[in-house]
Length: 614
Image 1 (tube, rainbow, N blue to C red):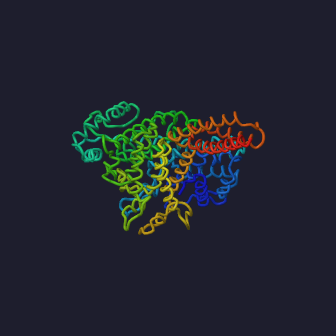
Image 2 (cartoon, one colour):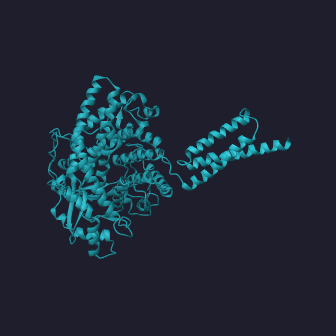
Image 3 (spheres, one colour):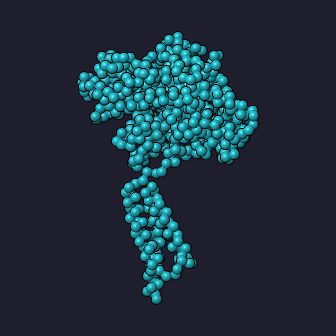
């Protein structure tokens, strides 16, 4: 199934608008209860394309396209849509604000009690989680950009007042989310003889070398990164002093929430309200690290910088987050590619060290960090080609592009999803789990990111085929009737023989698909990768065609009038166009030049026949 970003985004918007608005009024709904994560995901399904795709912009009502207005009829008319979105966003900010007027980042019903006989308490539901911090960064930046453009298009006092109120609340939430991300970052140092140390050595050594050799290789490979972390102690990174000992192993990244004993951020111009004490263990999760990286990168996007969306305090926080962003990418990218032969990432499935879990989902999260690193350093080398092969294997093992077998255990990765215990959450009154159900959507997102980066025709071709297969799989998982019509997720639609699989509305999967469609649009905006072989052939065709055209001009009679004159001008225009395209679009230049050669030959034959008759 070919990905058609514009048409498919319109389909998603129609479904989101139908579910979320009634005659312009925003319907919050409580699918399982309140969750700041789910509520942000729902709003981003509308706001993210509206701020990232020019054809979907809603902040300049006079330029909104007709097909966009048609699918958003439930949100309002051309002039009502922006103000109704502002009302919905204001409602979100108020809903997720605590009694002390500080923003809250509740995981809500996304948390699951480890003991299924117990119910989630109100206190547990209100716990902050990295998904909410990261999603809030993306939502707040999209909102600030939207408001900055929209307020210049209206003079209505009540609208300008609403804009000012929302901007203040959004800035407060953005700062709090950035602070919470800083307080959730951790560096975990442990001995090579500990259970976690043995597990890490097993993962990166793959049983091919002795533990002593692997430890020596780790020390050498991570010496520069270890030094950077040590130097960063003065910049707020909390880490055990034992990291200075090269015989110690370490991991860095994001815990599931604010870590226990994380210091409060107090060196800003404006005080940051809230900052509750953390309870998370100092244990980095690759999943939450990926989630954090996705949100943090929006702080450095072209749109954020161009519109000047960050204030002075936020710019300072952004630089602190950027350091952690780069440390995490470099660490996990090096772990994924550790060794000289087969990568640990290629040894599927990935085994987590701290929690002793293994799943293709964890392989995908490590691959996602590697993709972040490849994009950061603009890598188009062997690393990218090998990552493509990993994505293909993950699609196959996840039964995304292959048949599900009878009683296939892989179905559990899609429903009910991969479950992780949240280390330290038992301090809230009982151990909590976090469940990931978006394997296919995350896979598509990383495939498209790689396709955008790739400069190799073969690799990009493989990625595009895989992206279309994965999108086809996801598109068929839309809900076909009842609540959430045309939204996600109906796993049984693609796995009809799966047992005990229920249809359920998932804003997580819906938002990820929306992100993928925006990314696909950016992919198609790029120039196609030129083939040097075709470019050389096109140049040779152009050279011959140009020579024959000049000869025809020299020898033929009849001037520049009549049918022959029009034919010669057409040939000249097409040759000029082919010369412009030969380096960037050589196949197009080839296609333009080939019929020109045929026409020139026809003209030459006609001329020769005329000479003989004369």
